Amino acid sequence: MKNLDEFKVNLERQIEQSTGVVIVPHNNVDLDAFGSAIGISLIAKKFKKTFYIIINDIELEHGVSMLYEEVQSEYPILTLENYKKLSSSKDLFILTDVNKASLVCLDEKDNDSQKIFIIDHHNEDESTFMTSNKNKLIDPDVSSACEIVAELLKAYDIDIPCDVANYLLAGIYLDTNKLSNNATPETMRVVANLLDTGANLKKVTDYFTEDFISDRRVQSLVSRTKIIPPHIAIAASLEDDIYTKEEIAKVADYLLKYQIDAAFAIGNIGDRVISISARSKEKINVGDMMKEFGGGGNQYSGAAKINDCSVAEVNKQLLKVIKNTIIND
Image (cartoon, rainbow, N blue to C red; front, side, top):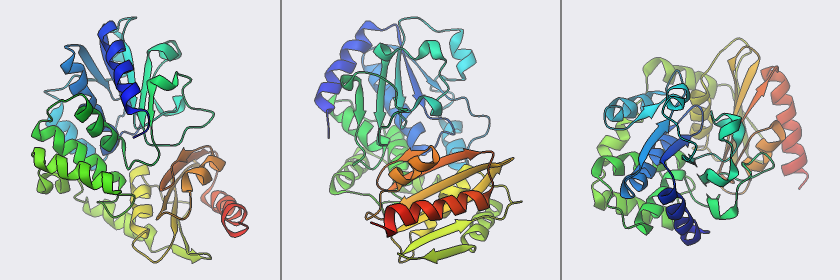
């Protein structure tokens, strides 16, 4: 993994000099962000540092809500406002599953590049936090933040409790669509190690149980899919239908079961606020395509949120992007 040894040494040095460790997953936290945040807390514990996990979301996706209920009594999970009451100027911030300032809930005064570390598997771009390369463990070739954190814990020789092994495996399952996409041989070795550690596959799959009404909504959007050359699936919602970001992501994941190279799901998540989720089997870099919409991602997975726009307008723009970046190539 890129830069792991240098990152490990630098992180250890900075943790020892800090008052506490503040672990910050991205907004609209998912199982990869949450699971990796809990994994990172084991590093703070190793060095006997106070730590906090910052989650500012009002609503949580079903699987994340299940995990939250399990861990809230054991882990200090705070809103940003509550953290401010306990904060120190010498706190160290570790961002996980994210590298862009617009996707986390930190204040500008917290954006000190010297005290921000990043663990992520999404591509960097011009909106990535400005911090030293020694403070970044970013590898788009890795399946998930949870896979990176599992490797980092191994490098620190930290024993992973069974429950944390479950959380890390859940994050890997999420970002590989249950090991069916972007699961490299190294990913499978990490999965095997987590199972050897005590991860329970039945418990992990419980996080992915579907809410009946939500699943019907997902399938309704799937039914609107159109397949266009060259082997691209696009599911665009009706203008009046409102979805969650997680439901749109599930649609994009679902479409990969078909004989296509890439899938895109488009839907309203608010008043003229559109979300796109993009997935690829390998040939097409959907993360780069999502940059055209102000989003990002990596080779296999990408997303974007577009304000003050309609589904039809975003769909039209997406067709242009596909034509310019895929068909014309």
